[in-house]
Picture (cartoon, rainbow, N blue to C red):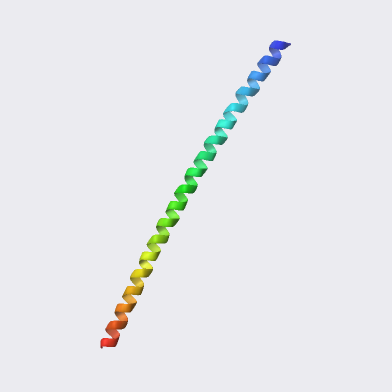
Length: 69
């Protein structure tokens, strides 16, 4: 009876440990993905800001040219 209990406890422990490790790995992967998405969003935002700045500069240049004509 004691052997059966010990074997049962070992089986349960072996089944629980990989689940906790798998959950930790999944959590780590999700965190890495979140950080990657944040960096991508920041990069896109910076590119949009650069394009907006260029557009404003070109609009101002156009106004100067129109006024000089």
